Image 1 (tube, rainbow, N blue to C red):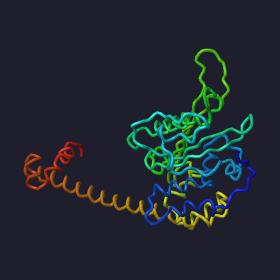
Image 2 (cartoon, rainbow, N blue to C red):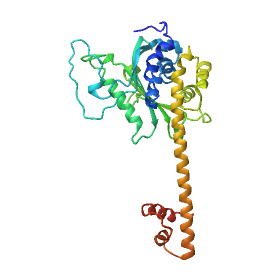
Image 3 (tube, one colour):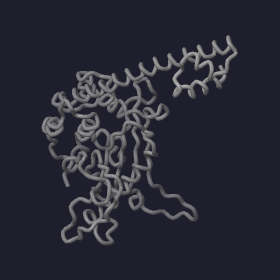
Amino acid sequence: MMPPQRKVRSMETQMAGSIGRIDGSASQDAVFKDMLAYKEVLAHIMKTCVPEYKDCTIPEIIGYIEHDPEVGQVGVHPDETNPPKIQGMSTESNSTTEERVVYDVRFSAVAPGEDGKIGLIINIEAQSKYHPGYPLVKRAIYYCGRMLSAQYGSVFTRSHYGEIQKVYSIWICSHPAKERENTITSYTLQEKHLVGNVTEPVKNYDLMNVTMICLGKPEGENYGGLLRMLEVLFGGRCTPRQVIQILEDEYEFSDIHSMERTVSEMCNLSQGFIEEGRKQGLAQGIEQGTDRERLQNIRSLMETTGWPAERTMDALKIPTDERPKYLELLSLPQ
């Protein structure tokens, strides 16, 4: 285990692998993962979202991160998650036919505890939508479950369940629903007394934590702290020079200028996605304007001639596949 007093490597060395993997064709998803794997970014996330580090400084937290974070390398499912086995343990693992999913960023860390240092396993995920077609919290809980069960044979063996390490799955949603913007929400296991009032040591059941970080706009409520830092990094609102300045002045990043190439790549990609979204919104607005004009023409001709809707649309040459939409709009109150 690495002590917090360890000299922190320079940012240039830490970022070298990330920069080497980024080129003009890199996807936004890949750059997100590389940026999230940078230890100083992780330390700020941990300071806010992992209670074990609330009283630690950023340099101390960086010192508690063990080894380099794994980026897009480890699968979530049983035949992919288990790290190397303890010497002499069976390598047999249950298989699964589920779709292959890979953690964005996963790493081990130690933290101060009542009985000395404790081990943690932390997963960070970048997610665009909070509602991707299923409850995102359930997926995060599944990831926690996998990180717990994958410890058998690597962290503990046989019935040594007391050695299980606590796991965190922290999700950063860049485009959440409006009601979730600028929020950080945590889900944990808690003790509830149903009959009687006996108490179990918290460390025996506080083994998994899901945290949802939902970014928002600068004018939104609660904008600041970690939410501001992540929005500045990933929101595409600032120029690379502004990002560097904010991280250096407000968040005390060290040797920040060695990040310039990576920050520039992130900003360029984010601006590209924003511009594409703007064009799509413009096209949608034009389409909606056409719909309103057509609907008005249909209503006017129906009032003038007394024709039914279908005959009116025949006269106006409305495409057949678009007519159900106008029939529905005609039924709505004006």
